[in-house]
Image 1 (cartoon, chains in turn purple, red):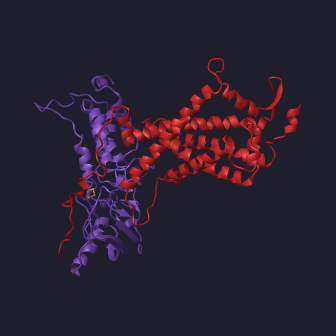
Image 2 (cartoon, helix red, strand yellow):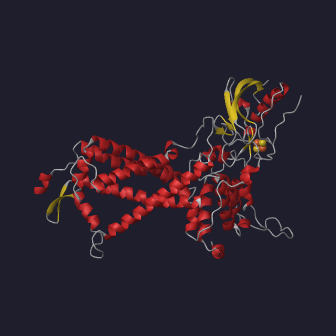
Image 3 (cartoon, each protein chain N blue to C red):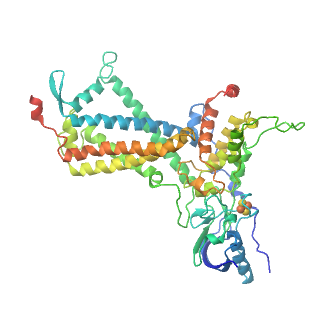
Length: 257
Length: 268
Ligand code: FES
């Protein structure tokens, strides 16, 4: 039999992008402690619907920590207090009976609020669209393992590719900078042989698109702490290095490294 | 029982797709580099490194204040004054007196201007892109030094102007300023407790600024090697401590008469 929790929620409610918003207090009663954070919100919403109130809008999809749709500030931390865990994987057993939980949407000028806790993160898509791909003239698929990739390189690319694009790094950053997201998307491709041909063009375009929407990194390190995939800030240094190179090297000679 | 009607898809309200910063016309290299925030951070890190180098040399030079009077070319002279003169005479047979010093000064002024301008424009960019939370933030990694860079920078800049007016230009009343008489001027200025306190406060701000600056510099320059990354914090703490201890020792030494100015010693 699981324990039951009674909690006080302070939730940001906002009817639309330009409507005024404010914190509203709700009582979450009788929450099983094996519920996830989002299931707790579901229970609160069911009650709101039954009493004829407008339920709280919050972002979610897979609820298994892989899609990057969920994400809210929980008591001043992106995705809540569990390190390396998305809000959908945060469980209520991490809270105690009687707790007050403050829930606020991601805040950044580039992420306007759609409603309540849902924000529009489409600028992140703009960054990926600017170069987060490998152009491959497709023909017959090549055999597996045709392109040898050392284990360390594959691991490093995979660490970067773990980014689920939730935007917690931007939300946690005092500057609303998207360096961790952009550098992860870049290193995912820039570290692999398939990504070399477009490496510097990709870096230049993605960084410059990023800077149209987001702030500048001042190396606080809040992003990695907030990241549900614990993506390392090392990638930010790699991105900075590649960007400076993209400006300095002669692209025709870039293949020589 | 009705299912909760929460949305997962983000629709409508496409205001997010409009850039917050308009695209500028791209200038030719290297100005194009400085047009971007990543490039500005690179310049900020390089100029910061130059300025830290200056601060260290300046502090080391001031240690001569402890040496008192020495025999220099057959004359009794305060070692600090002799050191000041030797800076003016750098490369003297090759270039005329004070010329190399001015080249170094111009380089330093250039580094200052770029460091301050990049900080100013990046701060403006960040003020335009960030959006403050209504609820209390729980900081996990950001520290006091990293969050106060713009304040420690401004505090130190204000002090720097005072410092130049005081010891380089002799504009601050309170003692008889004499051109080139370093020991006399430093002792005259710092024996005023108010000036000494201003000096200590400014150096605390400087040490904090240098601490986060050194830690941050490697990332901005793209210097990253997982084998050496753990040395960044100790290095930052070490350099900031050296600067703080060295610089703060001067006003304390003046107020406790360890560093003195006594004209009778020069009479020989
Ligand atoms: S809902 Fe998919 S990651 Fe949380």
